[in-house]
Length: 361
Image: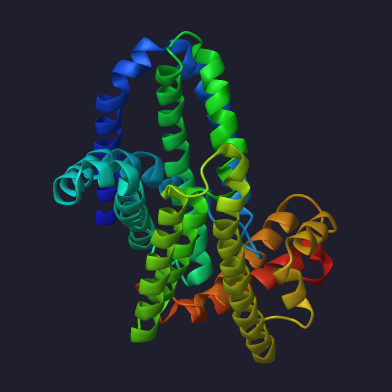
């Protein structure tokens, strides 16, 4: 991973974003230590829970934690930090061209959706460049887009903690942190950045998995839709905390509908690949059902003796899942990967049989 230029692009962008954010927020952080501690104590477990939940969105197996952290890091550091000066510059241009009153009213609904969604969605592209097999289709793009958006969302929530402390007179730092957490996380987390960027990420997953004119068009539509959802959220309509569910519901509904669509598409292709490999004799009848569901893989693990047999079973299932995913797409596809995986599966199946029944080996 570290030998790929995209990894160092990610590292430099995250470091640059962190330095920009530190320069912009450092004075407030030093001035309000109690609020910073309270906000961090609230946001840290929420981030962990969010990552865990988004990793579970994949219907067959969780995405690698390392790739997930790369996505979260891009959103929380690179995209968030770089968005601060970019938003300010765009806002200044809008103020000069459309007037300060228009900019104050509609600036957030125009500036943030364009700048922030582009910066966040670049994170999905970076993940695909670092690990070409990570983004094989719209479901992967959706998942990594959601993780990038979650990272951005948490950094922005920390910024709002600091802003709330200032707006409340900087007299009750911890209370301001709790208030900001309640309004931002409990009231708005269900339809925030994770959902917007997941929608655009699904489109990018189409073109990154299988480049074509049709998929490029789908990606363009999805990116524009993510910007439209972001603009709707920032627009000065339906103001007030009481109306947040009505304003956020369309974003969540769109995100859920797209997830169900890309999930269904993935499972159809996964099961089709499993049937083909069963026909080839690589998978045994009934094995595709076990591979499709986590609960069945967990159950069969406990039916195998601990130690080497259980480790071999885990390697066998991982190789089988890699084989079924191999045909789904991705950058830099290896035409010989499928044959190597089939050979590994045959060898692992033989070793597992020998480990379980040494008298038959």
